[in-house]
Image 1: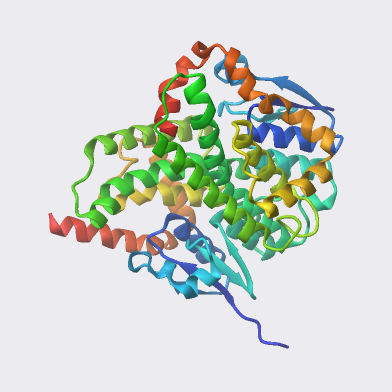
Image 2: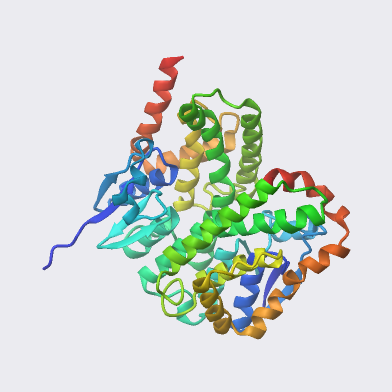
Length: 228
Length: 241
C-alpha cells in the first residue's frame, strides 16, 4: 500500500475561520498535520506560501496534493469526504440548505462586522501605533448590534442552534467570529442572554476544542490587559 | 408543484437563480419584488422570509434565501444535469470555493462599481470623488484578475470542462459593472472568451432575456424617480462611500 500524505492544514489561530476549521478537525478526530502560518510575521506573504495560495490567506487545506482555500469550502469538503457525524453538514436537503444559507449570509454579515471591531480596536492601533478611532469604532459596534439582532431574530428564533436542533458547521464559523473582539478584551455578547446561551451550547458540544482553539486569542487579550 | 421564486432582476443573484430555473425547466412561478420600491420590507415578504433578501425561494412550507443555497437546493431537488454541481468531491470543492470567495470579492467590487458609477451620482445625485471611483475600479480589476488566474487558469470553466453553478454565479456579477457602462471585457481576452462560453452554455436568448432589465440601467436612471431611494440613501452611502 502506497504511503498516503496526511491531510495538511495551514493555519493561524488568530484567524477566525482557521479556528472554526481547527475545532471541526478536533471534534471529528480527522488525522491531519497543522502548518502554522504566522500572519503577524507576514508568513502568508512568503513566496513558498504564495505558491500554495496566491490569495495569501489562511486557512488552506492540502489533501493528498489537492489544494483548497476558503474555510466553508474546506469544511464542507472534509465533511463530505470523510466519515463524520451527519449533524455537522446534514445530507437531508432542507437541513443542508439551512447551513448553506447561513454560511453565505455569514460572509456579508457576521464575519465583516465582528472582524471590523477587532480591526479597529486591536489590529490597526497595533500596526500604526495610533490610538483607536473612537467614532469609527462606535459605528462598527452599532453595525455589529444589527447583526446580533439578526442572529437572534432570524437564526436562533425557536431553535437552539443557528440551523436547527443540532450544532452544524455554521455555529462554528459564527462563534469564532463573535469571539474575535475578545482579543481586545471585549465580550460582544455580554448583554445578549440568548446569544450567550447559544454560545454555551456550542462550547458544550465541542468540549475542550473550544478553549484550545482560542488559546492564542486569550493570550493576546491577557497580554493587553497586563499592559494596562 | 412549482416553486415560488421571489426576484428582482436588477439583483445579480436573482438572475443566476432565474437562469438556472429556466435552463433546467424547473417548474417555478416568479413573484416580483421591487427593491427600488422597498418591497422587501413589506409585510407580505416578511412572511416569506425574515431575512428579507432576494432571491428567496418558497417550496411548500420551506423558504430559503441566499443564491448559493437556493441553487444547490434546486440542483439537488430537481436532479439537474451533473455538471452544475458534480458528484466528484474535488470539482464540487472548487465550486464551493468560488461560491465562498465571491461574496467579498467580485460581488462586492462589481456592486460597488455599479453604485458609484451610476446609481449614486445619477439617482441619489451625490457626487462620487474621482479617487473613490478609481479605487473601486482597481479593486474590481484585482478580483477579475483572480477570477482569471486562480479560478479559471487554463480551464474552459471554473470547475473544469463544463459550466457549473460557479460560472453562473460569476457571470451575473461580472455583468453588473457592465450595466453601469464599464466594459470589463475590454483588454481581457481570457475573460471575454469565458463569457462567450458561459453565454453559449446558458443559451444567448435566455442570457439576454434575464439581463435585459439591468442592461437598460443607464437609460432608466435618466427617467427614474430618485426619491424612491431616499429611505435607504444613508445606508447606501455609508456602505459604498
